[in-house]
Image (cartoon, rainbow, N blue to C red):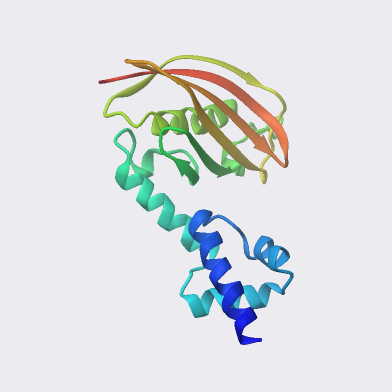
Length: 183
């Protein structure tokens, strides 16, 4: 029994080293054990809970990025692969809505997408010089917006990115951004 536990903990450590964003639920399903078992394994290995792991990854990313500070990114950085892809989350609140329609104002959705694109540019000077965007459905308070920015092409003074935002697995925003950068 001890060997099985050591093997599971070794695999758990390796999995979380590769992807610190795995939830206890996902890990429990993968190892066919209870969530409590995963929590105990994490505690024994000194691995913090998901929220703390996300903060650690975000702090590391912010320390390496030249374009934006932590307080300037709209939303919370969730995943980050330098020069490749980034993901942020934003919880839509009542302060973001139009009172008459009860829908989230488009500028909040755009701001999340644009700030993630600028963050991904990782340049001491990055500015959005062009964007072609579509808002695909209304968003309401209480929804969690998951924004993904992926670098499509890098030129000497420009970066092209595709940015999408989903909520409850439904696409709500899509954009193609061009950022001017310093070299």
